[in-house]
Image 1 (spheres, rainbow, N blue to C red):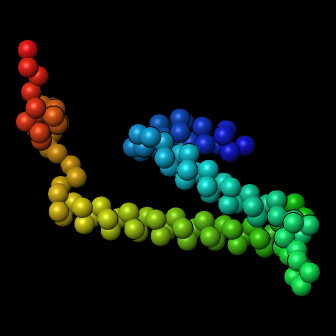
Image 2: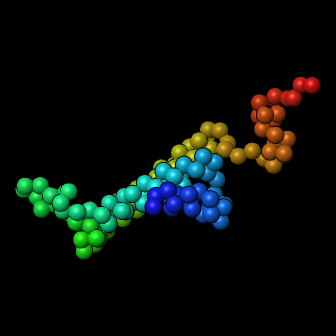
Image 3: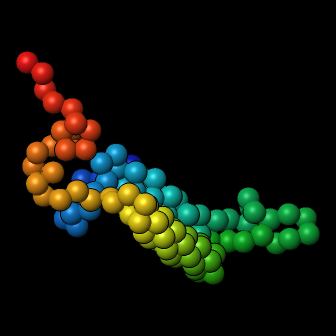
Length: 121
């Protein structure tokens, strides 16, 4: 299931939403991690999580929605934390060194425009 969902995000969703993920890090690790976290709330079973002094938790397959909601809340908080952290880091980085080049530099090629490298013939 994870392979199929991650593949779908790395191909179809990325193309449809036009986001830049050259190495498919979000499509594989982000989506796969969220899926795994949510499915822990689906497949949790008292037979595995119970202890002598604790009845354990059960998931959606055992008829308990609570653990899935806890897992979903964790995913939501993590997404917000990562989005905020990324925004702050990108703003600080852009303040120190611009993240984007102008269209002329992009047309010329970054090797030439930023590094002064030229093709020697």
